[in-house]
Image (cartoon, rainbow, N blue to C red; front, side):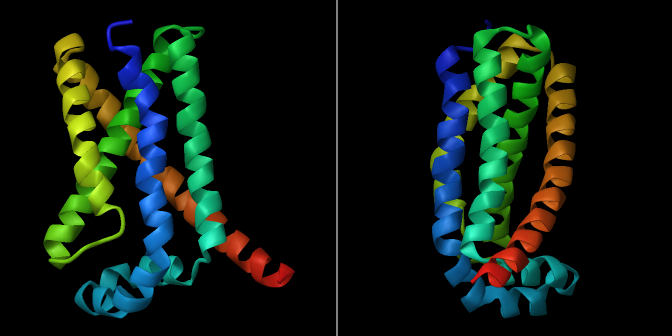
Amino acid sequence: MPVPLTLIAALPLLFMIHDFEEIIVRKAWMKKYASSVCDRFPRLIKSVLLLENMSSAAFAIAVAEEFLIVSIVTITAISGYFGTFVYTVWMALFWAFSIHLFIHVAQTIVLRQYVPGVLTSVITLFYTGYTIRVLFSVFTLEANILCALFGFTFMIFNLRFIHNLGEYLNNRIKDWM
């Protein structure tokens, strides 16, 4: 395997550390800053309101869905059972995670304030930067770009799915309580 196993195996761990930050501070941050974000960026009102109204439990379940995908793909990639296909899927998920981290940094720059997830994004950038360097030394530019595009596309569709799932679960949790 051309990429060290430690870099492959680290992805689910770092993903969860990052998402713990988001789970812990998201609700309080949204309560304090959602209206100012909506005022500055009216096109984001629907997304911001969805996240603001989503319970921490529903948000955590949505994160768990992503964590399961990352973990299953990582374990399968390490096992080598499906060969290069699953390894390519792992690369796509790695690129999606990396892009996600850069988005948090960009949000912080645009908003000029802390956003949930930015602290662990900055810390995790060391891992992603080194892994990107390794991926570019092992795979072609085209392979990396294709994996990044596939991963980013998957991330967008999965975010829509888990936001809808979160909204559904949020409503069910309200019904159960």
